[in-house]
Image (cartoon, rainbow, N blue to C red):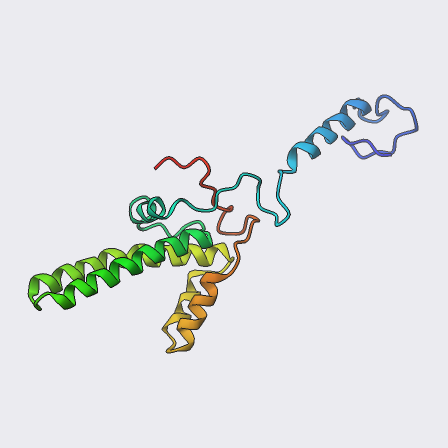
Length: 180
């Protein structure tokens, strides 16, 4: 056995290291306590216990539209991305239906244009954060510009499973203590 402090070899039953004076029993207890405290409790898939990956659908949409409007740093879980996208698409479809029923006018066109503009940046930001969750850079969004293939590639990338481990873009988002 070696000393935890200086690495020199210890004799059996030695209470203190003869080289550095380290208390052998105290060092072993400290290492054991550190190693048991350093391991977080995780489930079978590697996610932290009691982890909340996304908010309820409307709270999630509000968060993306307000607190994370321009935020491309960090990560977005699958749930965060798809809940935002669902509300986004419903709003766009309803607005398009209303626009098609109403007479074509500059006011209707202006409102629809402003709505599209208001939803564009948060959509782009949540897509970038979603790519970050899969440990990919925002440059992967260039794929969606390719006709036909880009749509399929974009959907596949957004459907990839969350990575429970920290990556170069940060740790896994946890909304268990979120205060809206």
